[in-house]
Length: 260
Image (cartoon, rainbow, N blue to C red; front, side):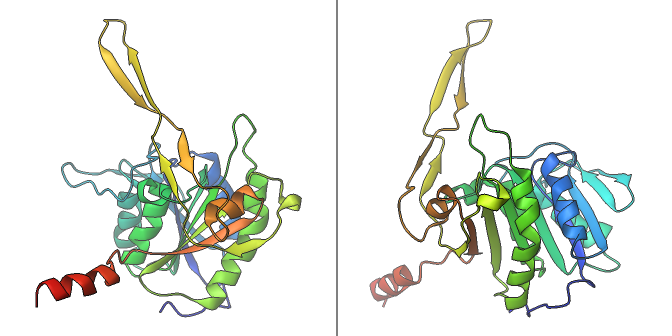
């Protein structure tokens, strides 16, 4: 178990994301982190890495660029950024907490398997550091309501840290597309059903060659009570503990009978 933490002021916090070092959401998260502790570091991808998943760069060298004091950019994936943040940039004194985000767009249901935001938190967890992924739901063409995440995130971070959680678990937090004062509550939810990429757009380039876009359309279950999707679509903040032990234990028992 990651032990409960009640005095957050002494925490060393590492921030990362998948939208890149210059993304608005990471600046929001820096402000959030500084309401908790003064010891805040940023190690994030140089460029946007949305939907990079938990990918690690192993076929080329990586460059780490110092942007400013305690802010670094990595020309790789969110996983690369957290790995280098923990084991290189902060190797003298490793972080006590990793915060990933705030992502521009939600990470709900099956999104979490593609998400670089969640992957950054996953890498931290694998490295033995408790981690929280934070995402702000958006509805086009409405502007992103960063103020909702900024208002509510400090309280949520404090509450989950006061509880503690398992060492193979990360926290996935999604903020609804409503202003901060219209949030209906904070709910602990399970992962819902949501599949990205069902919309395939085929087009021709100027030379007449075909190309394909994987569209943003999602098939999702918005009405299933208790899920992250239903809660966020109803105006609540969802907090979902994600375990990356993917073993199907019921399936193990059935398979064991086949091999006895």
